[in-house]
Length: 222
Image (cartoon, rainbow, N blue to C red; front, side):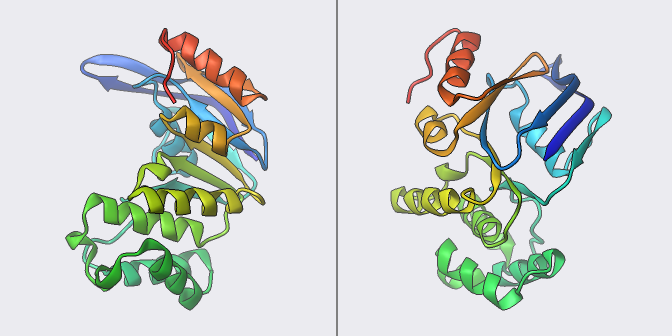
């Protein structure tokens, strides 16, 4: 379970204040794959970062009773002077999982080749995203936070990413951000729409998408 309690967060965009959370109280249903929808600049990624604990709210709190991943695809958790392998083994120790098992899974899945044994500072943005996704999928979390994860890599890697993610959320929950409504429909069964610092829950993903489209004033293309 993830519960937002009187959560408030405001940031400034081009000199204009934007409310991400306006004294927001909301409970995400457990063990459910939920789309987080909202117009550009509404603060979807900011909200994910607060849930992950990588960003603090202005007021209020976030209560969880299970393990929550960092935003899948987030690359800021890696030490740039360590190799991909060293970073993976370090994360395995932090989360108390088998270091050899996670290291082998990431090497096979991320398809980084010899770069897996090179410092992160030599990686492209896409390589870091693939590494982050592979590490995330190699660790069991009760809730996965996902921000445009299936946009990483070539077509074959996207298919592989979607398949392993669907397998993981078969036993876990997820909060998913994506601009692709086809991806949302494939990965999510329900949705929440972020608008004006408030969240509205829909137990049917198609109802959530319709509300989102009404908010932006135009149809969102698949």
